[in-house]
Length: 384
Ligand code: GDD
Ligand code: MN
Image (cartoon, rainbow, N blue to C red; front, top):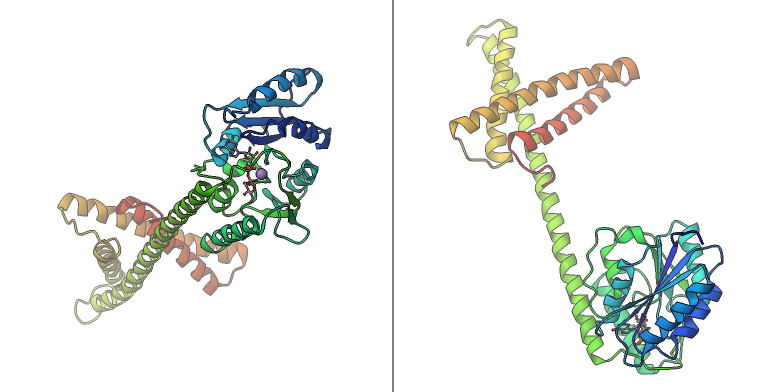
């Protein structure tokens, strides 16, 4: 049989699912479309009821009869649902990952719909949802429903998650969306962490009916709920730090750019006044010479103001200041030349009107001047 990379990896976390897992593996096998290569990864936490061993035996026989593969990962201790899911994902070879419970609460009949959604639409993540039209829950007590509702509310309001069922344990995604992300994998809610840490992805929800397990028992208890609150709090804190940091950074950047442009405008005034002054009564220079003096004067005042005010650099040691002054002067002349060429190019070969060409050229030159000086003259990071 030729080796074929799986397209889909299905992650099945198990803890004491001996009565469910084999039936589920069979049902998944019957339900996935024949043309997609699939690997199924069971992540077992050394279940006392022997789930791991049962799967192991099944896998040995299964490999002989089918093209799709089943693997089992044995972990030594019960480490929590999220961490089991993460462990499975890290070992997955498929481009698309499906995550589901192993107790038949998540009907395998939905899997083809999830795969279709991931393939056909602009879609990175599919969430099987109990809380949209067409979805529902069967077999839960009022208490369990209430807990789920409250937990969902905490997530949607507290973490500003838009998905209607961020607590779902039944979802699928393109593996590339988690590139470079680090997961805490605390507690039960892997999906919630995924939703919070991946902001710009396309999410689709498809409805399904959650059926409470027929065999075995739920592992969700009081400590799971406390763990949940801790996980939410951690996500919340991280997000807050990140957004205030980003905000601070962009405010700093914009205010520096604004100061740089203000200084530029002041240079215009200095240039104009000095040029006039030196060609009139006071010095009576030839106007070209007077203008050269004006230009040098404005570059100098611009440099001084940008050093002290825009970039808040108060270090006036001679070597440093001279080298900065040299670079600043160089970038100013480069900017002027670039501006001239741009105006010429826009007006001459693109029929742009002169005033518009001026505006475009001046802003481009001023902005690139700002960036060049920020980085090379005053040695700052570009975007801070
Ligand atoms: N490996 C491993 N390790 N698997 C675990 C662990 C663990 O520590 N804890 C639970 N599992 C497995 C179970 O064997 C089952 O396959 C799946 O994770 C879900 O566990 P249940 O105990 O059946 O959870 P539940 O039915 O109460 O909760 C489900 O519904 C919630 C919806 O409100 C889960 O899908 C939750 O993720 C979901 O939020
Ligand atoms: Mn369950």
